[in-house]
Length: 501
Image (cartoon, rainbow, N blue to C red; front, side):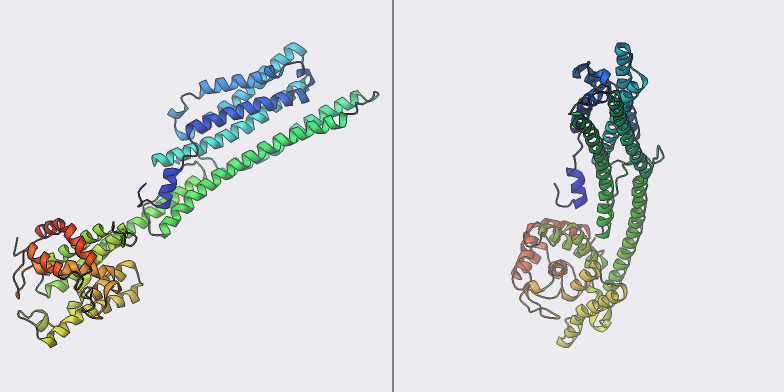
């Protein structure tokens, strides 16, 4: 996986917890468990079913599973919203059909009374409800993962349902179900005790009754906790998406979007968050364009006062980018030179000589060689530019762009051996941005025509730079230059000075 992916993108890439094969296995497990539990329940709460074999009791739900496989065979072809609704209605409907079928047999064989029919239907309906809700929540989770992998979102205009209402309805249903089943079981046991009012009650009656109640309680509580857990897992998933993207936005990443994968409040929250991020991104891009235009205008203004041209700006910033891109694979710089940093270096490079606006024209435009005193004044342009950018930082607040621009302006005339200016920095004490700019600036000065010198060809400029390895330039910058010199040549050819074109 690419190192440039955000943590959230990596999560989306790896998150395959609800694959289709896994969901089918869980579906089968739910139906199988429901068949077993209903067999035990039916024998305990309805004595008329005791003569029916466990296989016959489990058969209706088993057949319901086969019918389910047939009815949902093409469910993936429908919209995500419809899939959850369709699966839930099919599941609950099949369980109810299984209960009706079993009651028909119960009536045909035993002439079952209404309370026996009610017990069977309540048991099947409650099991079906628990199974249907849990599988629907699993289907929501599976579809959310699928939408994220496909980088798609739901259309919130259809089938909006409140998460809070769904959870409240489910909680109410669980409480009513537990109460109803316990009522039926207790009622059955009371009928049994009353039928033995004048008879000797078996010694194990207490144990038998408590076992039945314990079985019912354990099953209902286990399913209730399972449903609650499924709701919590889905809730955590939605909140994780939301918080992960907001964290990326806080880090300056305005590309990420919250996946809209639910037709409820979380879907609306994701949609609103995405709209906010898009607005931020639009304003950010507008600010960046304005900044870039202002930087180029300011840099061009500085260059027009010198003997250099606007093409010098275009060339040097591309030289810097070429060197930085090459060195981003170097073990010494790969952590520092990421894509964002390289872009900032590229955009701040034009301000390297902005301090020249503070140098008198008599010195800046002098056609001949400068005197020692004049050269001392000329050298002040590096600090003048850094001071001006420092004032901007104080007024606007420090940021990466201004920081790199100030480093480049102040230090691009420093030399690796410490003989440069204005602060005689040495080695790695010179900021990386300035070391990149130093080589790019010198190379362009060598291959460009000036009133005091002719333009050198690439080979002569290369020889001078190689001669400065370890003294003027960081040796790693020089090696990078030699390895991407074809790029330098191409840049110089593309952005020639007007008088050379």
